Length: 330
Length: 197
Image (cartoon, rainbow over all chains, first blue to last red):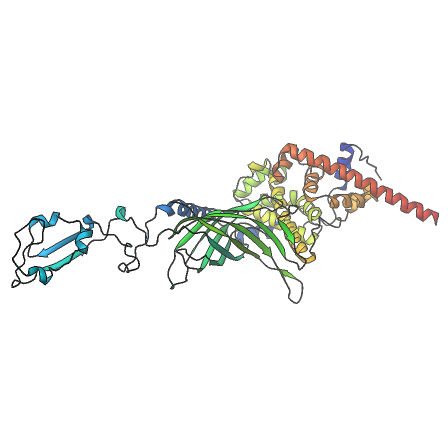
């Protein structure tokens, strides 16, 4: 038996080298079956798709504030008298028979629209006033009443000065959550691309519904190894249904969510019941129909022990984010 | 003839359609990859899976191995990442099951018959000391001292800088020395007790 002196680096390396490979290191699987398995395997998913998803999220974040606001199809309600503002170039008035040319240039449309369309009968009593360029033309009661038609043209995009819903200035609370599955390009268990669905609750006073449903696409890069920071770009979008009536609310968010992945830091706990919990800050920018808003919150992720018969199984990552939505001046 | 070609030439030939070149690569590095995985995971079955998956990925991959310096460093990089995935999965499951955070509590791999012949009782002590290292120290020591990768190759395989690898190697060697000394003291104590009886 040869003795090695591990006191020196060279002696220790020689000792380890002499230990060689452990027992059972000879592979049982043949090279030909590995080749066959490699040939059967579908090609790895293209990195283009996650890149496209990231690009879409970033694009949405950038273009969001510039996107045209939604215009209601119905007219303004009495409660919202200024929801639609008509401007003179956007409206034309045609009167048959033709009016004096001076009328066409006289009043701006806003005041014209609010002027009486008909001459009150009492004004017809007494002597007729002299013709004045600044008054309505003299109407003959026997003559057929002129037909007044208004043609309202849709405002051109640069003239859209009023959104359908004014940007909310209140701070709202949001709660979002869901389950992230592990699949795709990353094999690392705690991270990977995932899908989340969740419930969004917003505070009163905002233009968005109080309660909505959201869907999120989570793209988290594969960290190089354990004990690294894992995080990524997160995008959210979806259809919200909520008070006062069910309606489509196209909103999207984009932002970075970071989750420290270091076991020794206090951001990860193992609860006595078996739940494994990690927390981290969540910051995201939101661009919706109520203007740009900043979401700041606390993300909590957990893997739960599923108490079923047989060996315990661990749930996928369940995440919830609680925080505030703050308005950002556009 | 393929036996005389170096790894890069074998891989190039395989990608050119020569299947025997791939078989030669598997013959050359298969045991080393599986041995590395056994010591990283303490399980022969999982190590076999790692070995297969490593070469399946190597066969299917079209990415450049040059970024890792050598083909063998690239193969160890793939195997290492697969091992890390297994370790992370285990850690999460263990934490959730026990409610406690444990460091690696691996049982040491069994020494090979050749190692027993050369090292005698020391062989088991070496395996136990390797298993007691933290994974990041264990992988560096295995790649450098057992599998003979250069410092640069080791750094490429584990994704760290050469100075970091040197530092971790220094720590790993010191720890192995400590553990071997402790194991020898225990062995001598057992021997004294036996002779006293």
